[in-house]
Length: 297
Ligand code: URA
Image (cartoon, rainbow, N blue to C red; front, side, top):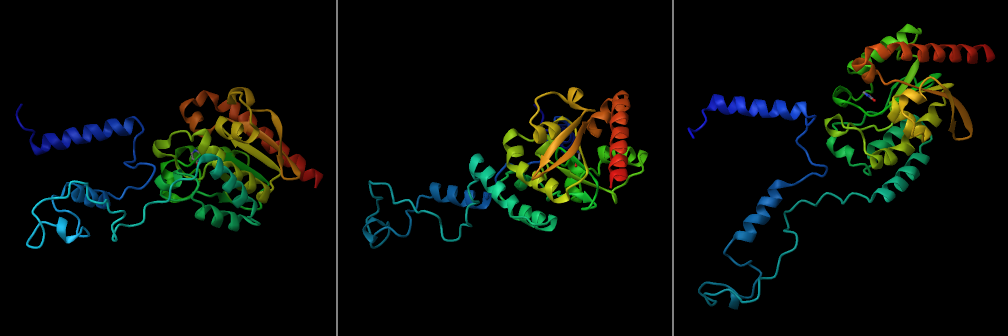
């Protein structure tokens, strides 16, 4: 086969990357960081014909020792002095959930919760995401919306719902006279899953204590779950979103009951625009619930 020319190679690589992107693979990272320099140094040491310098003189080749290696394998050096400390082993899932519960309980304000999340290392998604996507909007909002997890644009900007789905959400809010200065928006999982995959049950279990504490601290009058993932994570329902949406539920936040409704996720509405009529009904019901609360106050 004729060797590939540089332009052919570029085209082949571009095609391969486009294929990966189409399959949702858009990060070249594993879950845990790898120190390839240290790996290469270890491999070079393993292949080296020289025995390590800490062998007794008798075993060393050269003028003051026999030109042979000991029959027993040389003692293995543990971590070379200049090797950087290995990344801490991830917590087992149950321990991570316990740690998350304890950490979230300690937050007395949203600012404290954000700081605690910034320090929390129990969720592996933190290692592949660019940044924490904590929330957007007004901390004293009467309406709080909860989505699934940040996507690529959210990961870049550090704010939830700022991509195409977020722009549709903004239009839905505008239709009932609301904007981001009057609502509070967060996600079940505050770090972007690689390739925008759905968070695993384990990842959502680890992140759940933080969003439940966030809801307690915002203490809204009305809560909206955007999509089936948020609805099932916060209510435990196994029903699909087309069954769950549009019905008033009671969400227990600490010692308070909050009126809650699940609706269709804006990303789903972008793919299924005919379903916007269902979301429109839900949005109007939310508007009425907020107005009813206002007249009661
Ligand atoms: N989808 C979500 O569920 N959350 C975001 O922040 C963006 C897209």
